[in-house]
Image 1 (spheres, one colour):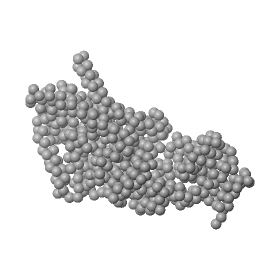
Image 2 (tube, rainbow, N blue to C red):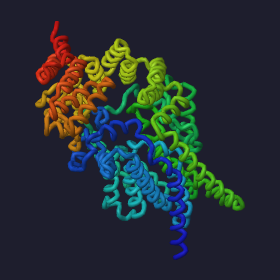
Image 3 (tube, rainbow, N blue to C red):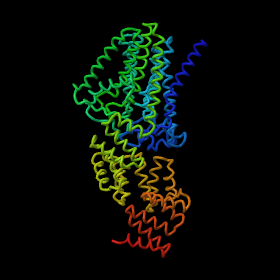
Image 4 (cartoon, rainbow, N blue to C red):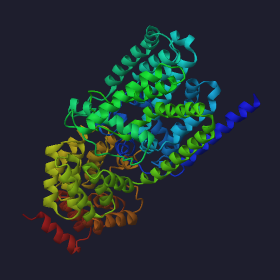
Length: 640
């Protein structure tokens, strides 16, 4: 007994060490994809004071209404991560990601032990370790918003262990509790009924009627939970789009693609350029149909014998868990490689048990088989470590996407964004122009083309792109970034309706409210600034700038006149006249000097706020009647 416990502890330690080594270099990796609106821009996770809202308001999941699905456990986990450092420190978020993977691995040891038999515990540890370090799972681990996969997997695996380990307790329905908890992270809980059916049928060797009776409660519960989850989604939530039939006929080929990645996870792309196949007789479609047929034949044949039933069950798990993303309900992308996480839970033990059966048939090859498994595990861990480097930054990730998926317009756009953020505007424009050739009717791309055109001092082109974006997708971003462009171009009055519309479209997004607040504070509208600040605090109670404006009507956090003035000067030299006006306004409240009033007037004039600018120039002249520059500015702005 002691030797068995020691062996179990050693196996667990070796498996955990391999997983930790595989992910040792991913803790500082950037946020990517949906992380922008689920984590980075999501003010709801900044405080745990109202954590119960996560369970009642789907808008707390994302600052983007079209993505506001109900996943309260995911949002709660992100809020806990944020609370660790009171910041968006990626280390805290990635640490939780790794801990969840280790928890998943521990549950898999139990599941695989049930699948292989207690006497094959060493195989269970090996299979769990291989799953955890599988290179394809690096897509889920580095895409933090995919934490929903990890949490829901923990719920489903816990339910499965209770269901399979204690069959005499099934009638009590205890296994439904962790299943329901996991559903609070992601919807596809209905697949459990299919897994339960094939387990009873093949692993317990019982009749179809018994299997149906055993699976029926989870099927009913799964449907009810799915109805609840759909009802709790925000009204603005959009699942995807496109042709149902085109999406459906593409999925067999996608399954073939996933199976290839499960065996050889080379060529992973964070954003593939796979498109819906145009015809049922397309070469790739035919290849996919043949794969599905062979998979069904293999499952049917392998399930008929007790010794090969674990392989059949693993392959059935692979197929069943792919069904939610491979139906007549099209998702935004026909394929996404992080979707392989759930199916791999079944594919890996099928492969490992195949090795075991081969070793039994050729006993002399047992050592070689185990050596091959060990080499495969290390190779997968190395591949994961290398893949983590690709996910390190937005630039490294999207450079990799454009190399592997050169026809992906979104990939080129996002690579252009990395260049724009680094102020390499010519590179950004080139990437955006190439993306426009591939995806000519992409509203988000037009927004970014407008932003980079403005940065390159081409306002006419910028305005054209913003107008095109509003024609294609009149969403929160199109209105906000056009409003920001208008304000910076001295057309603040034109910007305000777009800010109002952006705020209306995105009730949990602070940027349009912030710009409204800052413009009000800049022009001295303390009441308007306080109103906008209060709306920000209702979304993010930790917002320091909004809190300062509620208290003072202006942001006085710069503390002293000199510091406020200098920060205003720095902002003005960068043509950020909103920020400059706010700091100059704060400076005049701390010490109303003529030069501060004059500079405030100049920034307000640059924003197109001529009346407010005239008031500031007038205050400068009243403070120092000999200040000729202020007098000249007042005369110029007051003229026709």
